[in-house]
Length: 107
Image 1 (cartoon, one colour):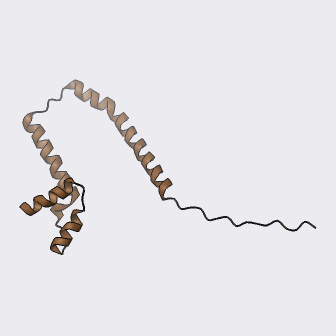
Image 2 (tube, helix red, strand yellow; image 1 turned 90 degrees about the vertical axis):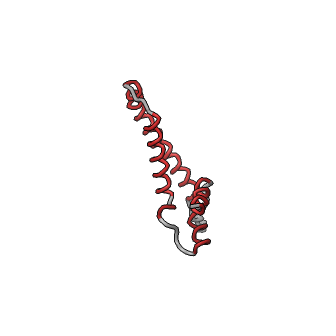
Image 3 (cartoon, helix red, strand yellow; image 1 turned 120 degrees about the vertical axis):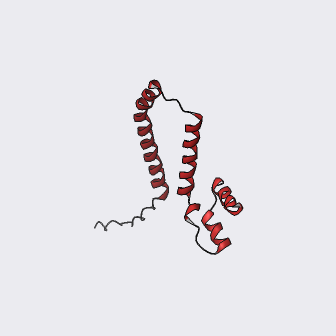
C-alpha cells in the first residue's frame, strides 16, 4: 500500500507516473494508477463527503445554477476556441519561401 501512495504523490505533483512505474517494475502501470481512475475516485470521495456533511440546495440555488449555466458554457467554448487559436499559431509551419520571378528583358 505504501508503494501506491508514492505513485499518488507523483499524481499530485503532475509527474510522469507511467514512466516511473515502468522504470521501477519493468512493465506497464495497472489501470488503477491512471489519471482517469484517480480523478473518478477523488470526485466520488468529494460527493460522499458532501452528502455526509449535508449540502442544502434550495430553490434560489437551483435558479442561480440554471441562470448561469449558459454563461459558463459559452465562456468555456470561448476559452477553448482561444486556446486552439493560440496552439494553431504556435504550431503553424512557416510558408514556403516564394521564388523570385525576374521580369523578362523589355527590348
